[in-house]
Image 1 (cartoon, rainbow, N blue to C red):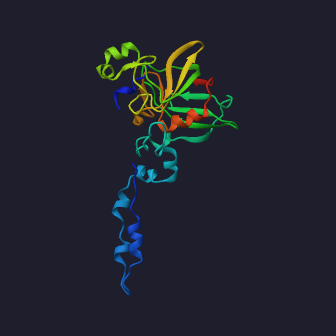
Image 2 (spheres, rainbow, N blue to C red):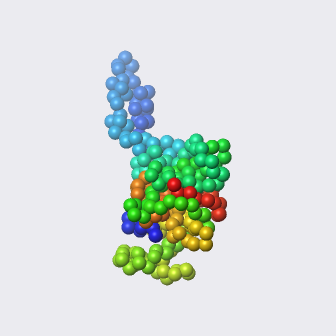
Image 3 (spheres, rainbow, N blue to C red):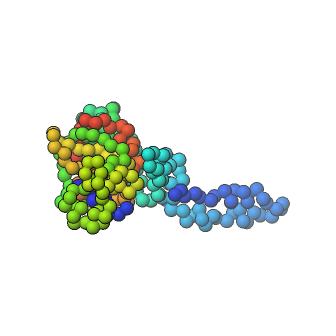
Length: 237
């Protein structure tokens, strides 16, 4: 059901030069050079300054995994959608996932009226959904099996799929639309065909873009995957 297939770093500031020149005065003369503003520092964007911070790198730096996950380029995901722990009174037991599609947030409920909050991309118009589901299974670097009607109507997918162990699909890896992790949502004994998964398109976080799946930055989906258990309840409000 997911259509992320369509669109498949570090920034350093150079502020040390001014400090070094400040110690090189000629006796009795003003240090005019040291007093000048650093034009490069002034032109750094807020995203570039954030990317140089330890907090940003702890959240969205490169991840060593089965396949390497690159650092998230600064400015791609607005700060309001960065992963963070927040106050959240839900009345749900810890371990529950609550998705607020309108706000583009996913909450993993913690104890003590707290939650880990993540920015997400959700279903575009006509593909959104709400209700209660269960995480039937979890997979790292999952294979992707698009519906046959999706394969037939999109030549780009048709060129990429091949025969895998469970049918026609795209093997897990760096070019797979499901990204680094996937959690499979079922209702009773029926697969909803919706997933919570990573993405190749981090710029779509905070937008209505998918065919119903809930997509996350790979660093975030890896974090959530490590917290949530199979069998957990997922509520899409």
